[in-house]
Amino acid sequence: MKQQYIRNFCIIAHIDHGKSTLADRFLEATNVIGKGMEVAQLLDSMDLEREKGITIKSHAIRMIHKYQGQDYILNLIDTPGHVDFSYEVSRALASCEGAILLVDTSQGIEAQTMSNLYLAMDNDLDILPALNKIDLPKSDVEGTQHDLIEILGCAEDKIMKVSAKTGLGVPELLNAVIEQLPPPDGQVDGPPQALIFDSYFDMYRGVVVLVRVFHGSFKKGDKIKLFSTNNEYEVEEIGYLGLKFQPQQELLTGEAGYIIANIKEVADARVGDTITTAKNGCAAPLPGFLEPKPMVYSGIFPINGEDYGDLVEAIAKLKLNDASLIYEKESSAALGYGFRCGFLGMLHLEIVKERLYREYNIPIIATTPSVRFKIGLKNNKEIEVHNPIDFPDPSIIEYILEPFMDVEIIVPSDYIGNIMKLAQERRGIQKNIQYIDEKRVSLHYEMPLIEIIFDFYDRLKTVSRGYASLDYSFKDFRPSHVVKVDIMINGEKVDAMSFICHDEKAHNWGKSITDTLSEVIPRHMFKIALQASVGAKIIARSTINAMRKDVLAKCYGGDISRKRKLLDKQKEGKKKMKEIGNVNVPQEAFLAVLKAERE
Image 1 (tube, helix red, strand yellow):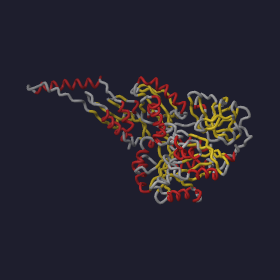
Image 2 (image 1 turned 90 degrees about the horizontal axis):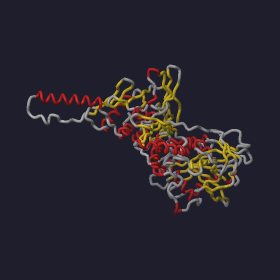
Image 3 (image 1 turned 180 degrees about the vertical axis):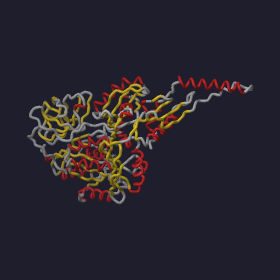
C-alpha cells in the first residue's frame, strides 16, 4: 500500500489513564475483534499486566480503517507508561510519526504524561490531544482542556473527547488520526533500514523481532544484518502484526511488522537496534540505540535450597524474554546459593520476582536493594560497586560517587508542604516550582537514587493522599558520604542484610532494622544481641532477651545459698550456650529487613 495511506502512531499516557482500554475500542471499531469476544486490555497479554493495570512490554497491532471510501492502514504501537520502562517508550515513539496524548479528565495531567510528551516532542512527533473518561461524574473536562491548551498551545477544536470504556468518540478519534497525523516519508528505493522496537522469545521459533521499516523493503529469504552485533541471519518468515501473525512475502517502506530469522537470544536483537540487508544495506544505523543499564541491584535466592537448580534454569529462560535483566551467580553464608541481579527499577524487580513464582513456581527472597556506586581508591583506581559485600575498607577509599536523578513530582497545591518536607528528608535538592494551573503544581528535584528506591513512592502517595505522581530519570554521579552498614546477630555478620546508606542516616536505618529483627527472630535460651555497625563502630543495638526457665521451682525451703548455687549453675549454662549455640534466623527476618522504616 502507498505510504500516504499508512499511519504509524502510539498512545502516550500516565499509568491508569485508559491507554490499553482505548486500544481495545480501536480494535473493535476496526473489526479486528468482535464485540462479544474481547478480553479487557487485549494488548496486555501477561496476567501481571492485567492485575496491576499497567503495560509492561510494548505491543503493536495493525488495523484497517475506512475513511472517505479509502482503506487506511493504522499501526498502533502500544507503549508502557511506567518510569522503569522509559527506554522502551522512547523506541516505540521513534517508530511512529504521531502520538495520541491521552489524559484522564478525572485525574488531570500527571508526571509521566509530561515525561512521555517531552520524549515524543524530542522525536519530532505530531501530537493529537485526547481527553478520556469524559463520562465519569467527577471528570473536569474544561479544566483539563485548559491545561492541555496551555501546555501544547493547540486550538480547542483539535482536542478530541472520548470515553474508552463506552466507546464514545472513538470513531471520530480514528478519523482524526488520519486527518491530523502525517504518513511515513521513507525512500521506497533506498537501502533497507528498519528499527527494532520490541523483541521476545518464542519457544519454537526463536526470537521474534518487531520492526518498523523506514527505507527500502525486506523480503522473505533476505540475508539481514544487525548493527549492534554485526551478526547475519536469513529471514524465515516476515509479515504483519494482527491478533495473530499474518505472513507476507515482504514488508514495504513505512510498514510495521515482524521478522523471524532463527535468532537464538533476545540479547542478540536488542530494542533500538537497526536491521539492514547484508548486501547493499544502509551505511549507518538509526540514532538513539542504548544498552539498557540496570539502576537497582538485588540478590535473589530460593527460599528452599533444593530449588536452586530450578532457579538457574528459570532465570536463564526469563533472560531470553527480558534482555534488560542481568545476573551473575552469588553465594551467601545466610541464604546459600543464588544470583545477583540488575534491574531497571523497583517495579522491574517486583515483576521478575512475581514471574519466577508464577511461571516457574519458585518462591524466592530478594535481599536489600542497592544501586551502583563509583568508588575511587587511594591507589588511583576507580571501581564500581553494586553489592554491599564488595564495598572496600574505608581506610583505602579516596572518594565515593553516587547516582543522582532528575525527579518531577506533580501534586495538588494543598500538599506542597508535605512533599517538600519528604523530599528534604530524602536529601532532595529543589530546582524549581512550576504552577500548571491554580490547583496543581510541578516540583523539580535532584535526588539520590538510593533514597528513591525503598519506599519513596509509597510515602509520596501517603503524604499526598494518593494524588501525587512521580517521574524520574538519571542525571549524573556526585560525591557523597555513604557508608556500608553491617547487621550482626550474636556477634556474627549476616552478609545478606548489609546495606549502603548516607552516613547521616546510618544510625536511624540501622536501629530500625535491629528493632524489626528483634520482633521477628524467636527467643532462644540465651540473650541475643542484634547490632548495626559501620566498620568496627557499633551504631545501633537491640536485644532479644533469653527465655526464662524457673530453676528454683524444685527448690523449696532451705538456705539462700542453695538457691544461689542453682542460679549460678544456670548462668554458667547460658554463657556456654551463647558461645556454642546457633541463632535460628527465620526467612521472615530477611523480608522484615526490606520492610523496615527508613527515615
